[in-house]
Amino acid sequence: NAGVTQTPKFQVLKTGQSMTLQCAQDMNHEYMSWYRQDPGMGLRLIHYSVGAGITDQGEVPNGYNVSRSTTEDFPLRLLSAAPSQTSVYFCASSYSGTGDPNTGELFFGEGSRLTVL
Amino acid sequence: GQNIDQPTEMTATEGAIVQINCTYQTSGFNGLFWYQQHAGEAPTFLSYNVLDGLEEKGRFSSFLSRSKGYSYLLLKELQMKDSASYLCAVLDSNYQLIWGAGTKLIIKP
Image (cartoon, rainbow over the protein chains, first blue to last red):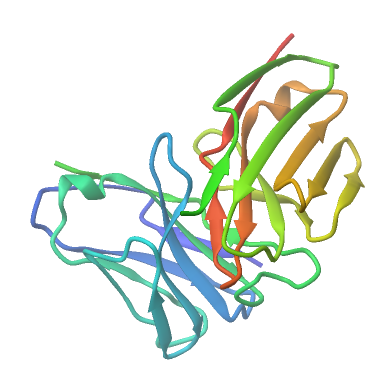
């Protein structure tokens, strides 16, 4: 049981380049999400999905696209990288949008550290 | 606006007790979470409170007062491995998580 797997762990891009951060979970979770974490700030939600074929915007969606063709996978695409997108990105999944009703637990991937030059 | 406040950094001694506070102003409330995040790693779940009162899990306890918009995480018998950031997050009326910036806890021997 691998949990939530994110790739790559590290990436350096030049301004204007595009790339995709991969996220896969093997827990059959309906809810998946992407966060970015920046120093001195709380985790900020980029996009989320409550099930295959359904995606929605979070707090900071500009410059990012997502898709959810299967329950397992939820890739995050950076369309044209900008230095402001330098951050650590976390994919997370849970049993439902509110997390497990009993524990409220979000399961996070190990994170992807992105630097845009 | 919605706001979660936590101290930026705290220092405590190995074997001691430390209390990390979290105050919140959010549009609605559907629960409060605490996560632990070691440097360079992913956050991991510690606790979830939706009703007022204290919940204990081993060395860690979490308290909630909804009327005061206040929670704390209590860590007892501190160990060096407890050095980490502790994130407070509130589930608002739309079932969206609002995250605090986290409290970095430094444990000294």
